Length: 477
Image (cartoon, rainbow, N blue to C red; front, side, top):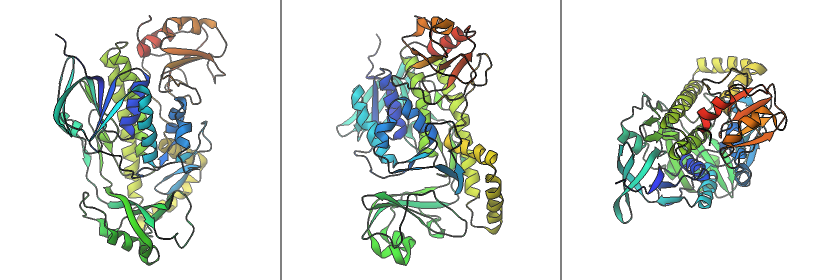
Protein backbone atom coordinates (compact mmCIF):
# COMPACT_ATOMS: atom_id res chain seq x y z
CA UNK A 1 0.00 0.00 0.00
CA UNK A 2 1.36 3.44 -0.96
CA UNK A 3 1.95 5.69 2.03
CA UNK A 4 -0.05 8.97 1.73
CA UNK A 5 1.86 12.20 1.20
CA UNK A 6 1.41 15.24 3.43
CA UNK A 7 2.78 17.42 0.61
CA UNK A 8 4.53 17.02 -2.69
CA UNK A 9 7.49 19.08 -1.44
CA UNK A 10 8.66 20.10 2.02
CA UNK A 11 10.83 23.21 2.09
CA UNK A 12 12.92 23.81 5.21
CA UNK A 13 13.57 27.50 5.79
CA UNK A 14 11.36 30.55 5.29
CA UNK A 15 14.08 32.92 4.14
CA UNK A 16 13.91 34.51 0.69
CA UNK A 17 15.09 31.37 -1.13
CA UNK A 18 12.65 29.01 0.56
CA UNK A 19 9.72 31.42 0.24
CA UNK A 20 10.37 32.12 -3.44
CA UNK A 21 10.72 28.41 -4.14
CA UNK A 22 7.41 27.75 -2.37
CA UNK A 23 5.78 30.44 -4.52
CA UNK A 24 7.16 28.93 -7.71
CA UNK A 25 5.91 25.49 -6.70
CA UNK A 26 2.53 26.88 -5.69
CA UNK A 27 2.23 28.69 -9.01
CA UNK A 28 2.74 25.34 -10.75
CA UNK A 29 0.08 23.65 -8.60
CA UNK A 30 2.50 21.63 -6.47
CA UNK A 31 1.43 21.18 -2.84
CA UNK A 32 4.16 22.57 -0.60
CA UNK A 33 4.78 22.84 3.12
CA UNK A 34 7.36 25.20 4.61
CA UNK A 35 8.99 24.52 7.99
CA UNK A 36 10.63 27.45 9.77
CA UNK A 37 12.26 27.21 13.18
CA UNK A 38 11.74 30.92 14.03
CA UNK A 39 8.36 31.66 15.55
CA UNK A 40 8.23 35.15 14.00
CA UNK A 41 10.02 37.06 11.28
CA UNK A 42 13.18 38.59 12.70
CA UNK A 43 12.49 41.94 11.05
CA UNK A 44 16.24 42.40 10.49
CA UNK A 45 16.87 44.18 7.21
CA UNK A 46 19.82 41.90 6.24
CA UNK A 47 20.51 42.13 2.48
CA UNK A 48 19.51 45.44 0.95
CA UNK A 49 19.21 44.98 -2.78
CA UNK A 50 17.76 43.23 -5.78
CA UNK A 51 20.23 42.96 -8.64
CA UNK A 52 18.98 43.49 -12.23
CA UNK A 53 18.62 39.78 -13.07
CA UNK A 54 16.56 39.12 -9.95
CA UNK A 55 14.38 42.12 -10.84
CA UNK A 56 13.85 40.72 -14.36
CA UNK A 57 12.77 37.33 -13.03
CA UNK A 58 10.42 38.78 -10.42
CA UNK A 59 8.96 41.08 -13.07
CA UNK A 60 8.27 38.13 -15.39
CA UNK A 61 5.98 36.72 -12.68
CA UNK A 62 4.32 40.06 -11.98
CA UNK A 63 5.84 40.20 -8.48
CA UNK A 64 8.33 43.03 -8.90
CA UNK A 65 5.78 45.87 -8.91
CA UNK A 66 4.30 45.05 -5.48
CA UNK A 67 7.80 44.46 -4.09
CA UNK A 68 8.99 47.82 -5.43
CA UNK A 69 6.17 49.52 -3.56
CA UNK A 70 8.11 48.53 -0.42
CA UNK A 71 11.50 49.63 -1.79
CA UNK A 72 13.52 52.62 -0.59
CA UNK A 73 15.38 53.69 -3.72
CA UNK A 74 17.22 52.56 -6.84
CA UNK A 75 20.95 52.64 -7.52
CA UNK A 76 22.33 53.05 -11.07
CA UNK A 77 25.04 50.44 -10.66
CA UNK A 78 26.87 48.04 -8.42
CA UNK A 79 30.34 47.79 -6.98
CA UNK A 80 33.34 45.48 -6.84
CA UNK A 81 35.01 45.88 -3.42
CA UNK A 82 33.63 49.43 -3.38
CA UNK A 83 34.79 50.29 -6.92
CA UNK A 84 31.78 51.46 -8.97
CA UNK A 85 30.25 49.37 -11.74
CA UNK A 86 27.88 50.79 -14.36
CA UNK A 87 24.74 48.80 -15.24
CA UNK A 88 23.29 51.33 -17.68
CA UNK A 89 24.75 49.81 -20.84
CA UNK A 90 22.91 46.48 -20.49
CA UNK A 91 19.84 45.50 -22.45
CA UNK A 92 17.63 45.19 -19.40
CA UNK A 93 14.38 46.85 -18.30
CA UNK A 94 16.09 47.26 -14.91
CA UNK A 95 19.68 48.49 -15.41
CA UNK A 96 19.95 49.33 -11.73
CA UNK A 97 19.68 47.86 -8.25
CA UNK A 98 16.42 48.05 -6.32
CA UNK A 99 17.27 49.20 -2.81
CA UNK A 100 15.05 47.20 -0.47
CA UNK A 101 15.68 45.41 2.83
CA UNK A 102 15.51 41.64 2.57
CA UNK A 103 12.86 41.57 5.29
CA UNK A 104 10.43 43.41 3.02
CA UNK A 105 11.03 40.95 0.19
CA UNK A 106 10.39 38.06 2.58
CA UNK A 107 7.23 39.73 3.86
CA UNK A 108 5.77 39.95 0.34
CA UNK A 109 6.76 36.40 -0.57
CA UNK A 110 5.30 34.90 2.61
CA UNK A 111 2.05 36.86 2.30
CA UNK A 112 1.75 35.83 -1.34
CA UNK A 113 1.80 32.12 -0.43
CA UNK A 114 -1.80 32.50 0.77
CA UNK A 115 -2.80 32.64 -2.90
CA UNK A 116 -1.83 28.97 -3.21
CA UNK A 117 -2.91 27.84 0.23
CA UNK A 118 0.72 27.06 1.11
CA UNK A 119 1.34 26.83 4.84
CA UNK A 120 4.40 28.16 6.66
CA UNK A 121 4.74 26.32 9.96
CA UNK A 122 6.64 28.73 12.17
CA UNK A 123 8.26 27.40 15.30
CA UNK A 124 8.68 24.01 13.64
CA UNK A 125 12.14 22.52 13.13
CA UNK A 126 13.30 19.55 11.09
CA UNK A 127 15.02 17.00 13.33
CA UNK A 128 15.71 14.21 10.85
CA UNK A 129 14.72 12.55 7.60
CA UNK A 130 15.08 9.36 5.60
CA UNK A 131 14.55 8.92 1.90
CA UNK A 132 13.48 5.95 -0.18
CA UNK A 133 12.63 5.40 -3.85
CA UNK A 134 9.12 6.85 -3.41
CA UNK A 135 9.71 9.84 -1.16
CA UNK A 136 11.16 11.40 1.98
CA UNK A 137 9.99 10.86 5.57
CA UNK A 138 10.68 13.88 7.76
CA UNK A 139 10.63 14.13 11.53
CA UNK A 140 10.02 17.58 12.96
CA UNK A 141 9.37 19.21 16.29
CA UNK A 142 6.90 21.95 17.05
CA UNK A 143 5.01 23.48 19.95
CA UNK A 144 3.00 20.28 20.42
CA UNK A 145 5.93 17.89 20.18
CA UNK A 146 7.54 15.66 17.59
CA UNK A 147 5.72 14.42 14.49
CA UNK A 148 6.31 12.82 11.08
CA UNK A 149 5.66 14.11 7.58
CA UNK A 150 5.85 12.45 4.21
CA UNK A 151 6.67 14.17 0.89
CA UNK A 152 7.99 13.32 -2.53
CA UNK A 153 10.92 15.75 -2.20
CA UNK A 154 12.68 17.74 0.51
CA UNK A 155 14.52 21.02 -0.10
CA UNK A 156 16.94 22.48 2.42
CA UNK A 157 16.85 26.28 2.24
CA UNK A 158 17.79 26.56 5.88
CA UNK A 159 20.86 28.78 5.75
CA UNK A 160 24.60 28.45 6.01
CA UNK A 161 24.40 26.12 9.01
CA UNK A 162 21.83 23.97 7.22
CA UNK A 163 20.64 20.99 9.21
CA UNK A 164 19.38 19.39 6.02
CA UNK A 165 22.84 19.58 4.46
CA UNK A 166 24.52 18.20 7.56
CA UNK A 167 22.10 15.29 7.89
CA UNK A 168 22.43 14.59 4.19
CA UNK A 169 26.18 14.27 4.63
CA UNK A 170 27.06 16.42 1.63
CA UNK A 171 30.56 17.90 1.78
CA UNK A 172 30.85 21.66 2.30
CA UNK A 173 34.45 22.42 1.36
CA UNK A 174 36.01 25.84 1.46
CA UNK A 175 37.69 27.93 4.12
CA UNK A 176 36.81 29.50 7.44
CA UNK A 177 36.53 33.24 7.91
CA UNK A 178 39.64 35.35 8.29
CA UNK A 179 38.00 38.71 8.88
CA UNK A 180 34.94 39.48 10.99
CA UNK A 181 32.38 42.26 11.14
CA UNK A 182 29.08 43.12 12.76
CA UNK A 183 25.88 44.51 11.36
CA UNK A 184 22.99 46.10 13.21
CA UNK A 185 19.74 47.92 12.56
CA UNK A 186 19.82 50.80 15.02
CA UNK A 187 17.70 53.76 16.05
CA UNK A 188 19.34 57.09 16.89
CA UNK A 189 17.91 59.72 19.25
CA UNK A 190 18.44 62.39 16.63
CA UNK A 191 19.59 62.50 13.00
CA UNK A 192 23.31 62.12 12.28
CA UNK A 193 25.45 65.23 12.27
CA UNK A 194 25.70 65.09 8.49
CA UNK A 195 23.14 64.16 5.88
CA UNK A 196 23.26 60.52 4.91
CA UNK A 197 22.00 59.31 1.55
CA UNK A 198 21.33 55.83 0.26
CA UNK A 199 24.55 55.01 -1.54
CA UNK A 200 26.90 52.25 -2.52
CA UNK A 201 29.64 51.55 0.01
CA UNK A 202 32.96 53.21 -0.80
CA UNK A 203 35.32 50.91 1.05
CA UNK A 204 38.91 52.07 1.19
CA UNK A 205 41.52 49.98 3.02
CA UNK A 206 42.95 51.93 5.88
CA UNK A 207 40.05 54.37 6.29
CA UNK A 208 38.30 52.23 8.87
CA UNK A 209 35.11 54.27 8.45
CA UNK A 210 31.97 52.42 9.56
CA UNK A 211 29.08 52.35 7.14
CA UNK A 212 25.86 54.05 8.30
CA UNK A 213 22.89 53.95 5.95
CA UNK A 214 19.34 55.30 6.45
CA UNK A 215 16.55 52.72 6.10
CA UNK A 216 13.62 55.04 6.86
CA UNK A 217 11.42 55.53 9.93
CA UNK A 218 14.48 56.61 11.91
CA UNK A 219 16.25 53.26 11.44
CA UNK A 220 19.83 53.03 10.18
CA UNK A 221 21.88 50.10 8.96
CA UNK A 222 25.25 50.12 10.71
CA UNK A 223 28.14 47.98 9.48
CA UNK A 224 31.45 47.93 11.31
CA UNK A 225 34.53 45.75 11.59
CA UNK A 226 38.10 46.23 12.67
CA UNK A 227 40.42 44.48 15.15
CA UNK A 228 37.80 44.49 17.92
CA UNK A 229 35.70 42.05 15.90
CA UNK A 230 38.46 39.53 15.31
CA UNK A 231 38.00 36.38 17.35
CA UNK A 232 34.48 37.31 18.46
CA UNK A 233 32.01 34.46 18.93
CA UNK A 234 29.61 34.67 15.99
CA UNK A 235 26.75 33.76 18.32
CA UNK A 236 27.57 36.47 20.85
CA UNK A 237 25.08 39.35 20.91
CA UNK A 238 26.21 42.68 19.53
CA UNK A 239 26.30 44.99 22.55
CA UNK A 240 25.35 48.64 22.86
CA UNK A 241 28.84 49.45 24.15
CA UNK A 242 30.61 48.12 21.06
CA UNK A 243 28.11 49.84 18.75
CA UNK A 244 28.65 53.15 20.56
CA UNK A 245 32.44 52.77 20.30
CA UNK A 246 32.20 52.01 16.60
CA UNK A 247 29.80 54.91 16.01
CA UNK A 248 32.36 57.24 17.60
CA UNK A 249 32.04 60.37 19.68
CA UNK A 250 29.57 62.04 17.32
CA UNK A 251 27.00 59.30 16.73
CA UNK A 252 27.65 57.04 19.71
CA UNK A 253 25.86 59.24 22.20
CA UNK A 254 22.79 59.26 19.98
CA UNK A 255 22.21 55.50 20.01
CA UNK A 256 18.72 54.78 21.33
CA UNK A 257 18.37 51.08 20.64
CA UNK A 258 19.64 48.11 18.68
CA UNK A 259 16.63 46.63 16.90
CA UNK A 260 18.45 43.62 15.50
CA UNK A 261 22.03 42.57 14.92
CA UNK A 262 24.33 39.77 13.81
CA UNK A 263 27.95 38.99 13.12
CA UNK A 264 29.51 37.64 9.94
CA UNK A 265 32.85 36.65 8.46
CA UNK A 266 34.34 36.13 5.03
CA UNK A 267 34.02 32.34 5.27
CA UNK A 268 33.62 30.79 1.84
CA UNK A 269 32.14 27.32 1.29
CA UNK A 270 30.05 25.48 -1.29
CA UNK A 271 28.18 22.18 -1.17
CA UNK A 272 29.79 19.52 -3.33
CA UNK A 273 26.37 18.49 -4.61
CA UNK A 274 23.11 20.42 -4.74
CA UNK A 275 21.05 17.25 -4.73
CA UNK A 276 21.21 13.72 -3.43
CA UNK A 277 18.30 11.50 -4.40
CA UNK A 278 15.11 13.26 -3.33
CA UNK A 279 16.81 15.92 -1.20
CA UNK A 280 18.03 19.23 -2.65
CA UNK A 281 19.88 22.29 -1.33
CA UNK A 282 19.34 25.94 -2.26
CA UNK A 283 20.45 29.38 -1.15
CA UNK A 284 22.89 29.66 1.76
CA UNK A 285 22.41 25.96 2.51
CA UNK A 286 24.32 25.37 -0.74
CA UNK A 287 26.85 28.22 -0.56
CA UNK A 288 28.18 30.86 1.83
CA UNK A 289 30.48 33.75 0.99
CA UNK A 290 31.62 37.21 2.01
CA UNK A 291 28.69 39.61 1.43
CA UNK A 292 30.59 41.71 -1.12
CA UNK A 293 28.90 43.28 -4.11
CA UNK A 294 25.38 42.56 -2.87
CA UNK A 295 25.10 39.10 -4.43
CA UNK A 296 23.96 36.74 -1.65
CA UNK A 297 20.20 37.36 -1.63
CA UNK A 298 20.15 37.34 -5.41
CA UNK A 299 22.13 34.11 -5.74
CA UNK A 300 19.54 32.35 -3.56
CA UNK A 301 16.54 33.83 -5.39
CA UNK A 302 17.97 32.69 -8.71
CA UNK A 303 18.58 29.18 -7.30
CA UNK A 304 14.86 29.10 -6.52
CA UNK A 305 13.84 30.31 -9.98
CA UNK A 306 16.01 27.64 -11.58
CA UNK A 307 14.80 24.83 -9.34
CA UNK A 308 11.10 25.57 -8.93
CA UNK A 309 9.76 24.78 -12.40
CA UNK A 310 12.06 21.78 -12.76
CA UNK A 311 10.94 20.25 -9.48
CA UNK A 312 7.30 20.90 -10.40
CA UNK A 313 7.76 19.16 -13.76
CA UNK A 314 9.23 16.08 -12.04
CA UNK A 315 6.63 15.97 -9.25
CA UNK A 316 3.81 16.20 -11.78
CA UNK A 317 5.29 13.42 -13.89
CA UNK A 318 5.94 15.43 -17.04
CA UNK A 319 9.68 14.75 -16.90
CA UNK A 320 11.80 12.20 -15.09
CA UNK A 321 14.07 12.97 -12.15
CA UNK A 322 17.07 13.35 -14.45
CA UNK A 323 15.93 16.92 -15.10
CA UNK A 324 16.94 17.83 -11.55
CA UNK A 325 20.56 17.10 -12.43
CA UNK A 326 20.47 20.26 -14.54
CA UNK A 327 19.76 22.24 -11.39
CA UNK A 328 23.15 21.18 -10.05
CA UNK A 329 24.98 21.43 -13.37
CA UNK A 330 23.66 24.95 -14.04
CA UNK A 331 23.66 26.53 -10.59
CA UNK A 332 26.80 25.03 -9.04
CA UNK A 333 29.13 26.85 -11.48
CA UNK A 334 27.24 30.10 -10.90
CA UNK A 335 27.68 29.71 -7.14
CA UNK A 336 31.36 28.86 -7.55
CA UNK A 337 31.88 32.03 -9.56
CA UNK A 338 30.28 34.16 -6.85
CA UNK A 339 32.53 32.55 -4.25
CA UNK A 340 35.52 33.33 -6.46
CA UNK A 341 34.67 36.99 -6.99
CA UNK A 342 33.77 37.62 -3.33
CA UNK A 343 37.09 36.15 -2.23
CA UNK A 344 38.84 38.46 -4.69
CA UNK A 345 36.89 41.41 -3.31
CA UNK A 346 37.90 40.43 0.20
CA UNK A 347 41.56 40.68 -0.76
CA UNK A 348 40.95 44.17 -2.14
CA UNK A 349 39.61 45.28 1.25
CA UNK A 350 42.72 44.32 3.25
CA UNK A 351 44.12 47.49 4.93
CA UNK A 352 47.56 47.30 3.34
CA UNK A 353 49.62 49.71 1.24
CA UNK A 354 50.18 47.14 -1.49
CA UNK A 355 46.45 46.49 -1.69
CA UNK A 356 45.82 50.21 -2.01
CA UNK A 357 48.19 50.24 -4.98
CA UNK A 358 46.29 47.33 -6.52
CA UNK A 359 42.98 49.16 -6.02
CA UNK A 360 44.36 52.23 -7.76
CA UNK A 361 45.37 50.14 -10.77
CA UNK A 362 41.99 48.35 -10.83
CA UNK A 363 40.23 51.72 -10.65
CA UNK A 364 42.03 52.70 -13.85
CA UNK A 365 41.13 49.39 -15.48
CA UNK A 366 37.45 49.78 -14.59
CA UNK A 367 37.42 53.17 -16.28
CA UNK A 368 37.61 51.18 -19.54
CA UNK A 369 33.96 50.47 -20.50
CA UNK A 370 34.62 46.88 -21.67
CA UNK A 371 36.35 45.96 -18.40
CA UNK A 372 33.65 47.62 -16.31
CA UNK A 373 30.96 45.81 -18.25
CA UNK A 374 32.67 42.45 -17.69
CA UNK A 375 32.56 42.78 -13.91
CA UNK A 376 29.15 44.48 -13.95
CA UNK A 377 27.67 41.53 -15.82
CA UNK A 378 29.09 39.15 -13.22
CA UNK A 379 27.85 41.05 -10.16
CA UNK A 380 24.43 41.88 -11.62
CA UNK A 381 23.73 38.32 -12.80
CA UNK A 382 23.05 39.60 -16.32
CA UNK A 383 25.87 37.57 -17.89
CA UNK A 384 24.62 34.15 -16.70
CA UNK A 385 24.29 31.74 -19.58
CA UNK A 386 23.33 28.09 -19.25
CA UNK A 387 24.45 25.24 -21.52
CA UNK A 388 21.61 23.78 -23.56
CA UNK A 389 22.87 20.40 -24.75
CA UNK A 390 21.39 18.92 -27.89
CA UNK A 391 19.88 22.15 -29.25
CA UNK A 392 21.05 23.59 -32.59
CA UNK A 393 23.77 26.19 -32.08
CA UNK A 394 22.56 29.79 -32.02
CA UNK A 395 23.95 33.03 -30.53
CA UNK A 396 20.88 33.36 -28.27
CA UNK A 397 20.96 29.81 -26.96
CA UNK A 398 21.30 29.66 -23.17
CA UNK A 399 21.02 33.42 -22.73
CA UNK A 400 18.36 35.36 -20.85
CA UNK A 401 15.65 37.13 -22.82
CA UNK A 402 14.28 39.88 -20.57
CA UNK A 403 10.96 41.66 -20.74
CA UNK A 404 8.81 38.61 -21.51
CA UNK A 405 5.85 38.17 -19.18
CA UNK A 406 5.53 34.65 -17.72
CA UNK A 407 2.98 35.22 -14.92
CA UNK A 408 1.72 31.64 -14.98
CA UNK A 409 5.20 30.12 -14.79
CA UNK A 410 4.94 28.45 -18.20
CA UNK A 411 7.43 28.49 -21.02
CA UNK A 412 6.94 30.83 -23.98
CA UNK A 413 7.40 30.39 -27.73
CA UNK A 414 8.01 33.75 -29.37
CA UNK A 415 7.75 34.00 -33.15
CA UNK A 416 8.52 36.94 -35.38
CA UNK A 417 5.18 36.46 -37.17
CA UNK A 418 1.82 34.97 -36.31
CA UNK A 419 1.23 31.37 -37.28
CA UNK A 420 4.08 29.64 -39.04
CA UNK A 421 5.65 26.27 -38.55
CA UNK A 422 7.14 26.81 -35.05
CA UNK A 423 3.72 27.70 -33.64
CA UNK A 424 2.19 24.64 -35.34
CA UNK A 425 4.91 22.35 -34.00
CA UNK A 426 4.31 23.67 -30.47
CA UNK A 427 0.55 23.07 -30.54
CA UNK A 428 0.71 19.77 -28.57
CA UNK A 429 2.54 21.58 -25.73
CA UNK A 430 0.19 24.54 -25.27
CA UNK A 431 -0.79 23.32 -21.80
CA UNK A 432 2.84 23.99 -20.79
CA UNK A 433 3.87 26.90 -23.02
CA UNK A 434 2.32 30.10 -24.28
CA UNK A 435 2.69 31.27 -27.87
CA UNK A 436 3.06 34.90 -28.88
CA UNK A 437 4.67 37.15 -31.45
CA UNK A 438 7.56 39.53 -30.84
CA UNK A 439 10.39 41.27 -32.62
CA UNK A 440 13.36 38.99 -32.13
CA UNK A 441 17.07 39.82 -32.46
CA UNK A 442 18.63 37.42 -34.96
CA UNK A 443 16.04 34.64 -34.89
CA UNK A 444 12.64 33.89 -36.39
CA UNK A 445 11.47 32.02 -33.29
CA UNK A 446 12.70 31.52 -29.72
CA UNK A 447 11.62 29.11 -26.99
CA UNK A 448 11.96 30.27 -23.38
CA UNK A 449 12.05 28.04 -20.33
CA UNK A 450 9.91 29.13 -17.36
CA UNK A 451 12.98 30.82 -15.86
CA UNK A 452 13.38 33.07 -18.89
CA UNK A 453 16.39 31.42 -20.55
CA UNK A 454 16.46 30.55 -24.26
CA UNK A 455 16.41 26.77 -24.72
CA UNK A 456 15.88 26.86 -28.50
CA UNK A 457 16.30 29.52 -31.17
CA UNK A 458 16.17 29.02 -34.87
CA UNK A 459 14.79 29.54 -38.32
CA UNK A 460 11.17 29.56 -39.34
CA UNK A 461 11.17 25.87 -40.29
CA UNK A 462 11.43 24.93 -36.59
CA UNK A 463 14.46 22.64 -36.93
CA UNK A 464 15.13 21.05 -33.54
CA UNK A 465 12.12 22.68 -31.85
CA UNK A 466 10.21 19.47 -31.21
CA UNK A 467 13.27 17.93 -29.55
CA UNK A 468 13.75 21.00 -27.33
CA UNK A 469 10.08 20.98 -26.33
CA UNK A 470 10.28 17.31 -25.38
CA UNK A 471 13.55 17.75 -23.48
CA UNK A 472 12.42 20.71 -21.35
CA UNK A 473 8.64 20.29 -21.20
CA UNK A 474 8.00 16.56 -21.57
CA UNK A 475 6.19 14.48 -24.15
CA UNK A 476 3.48 15.98 -26.35
CA UNK A 477 -0.02 15.52 -25.01
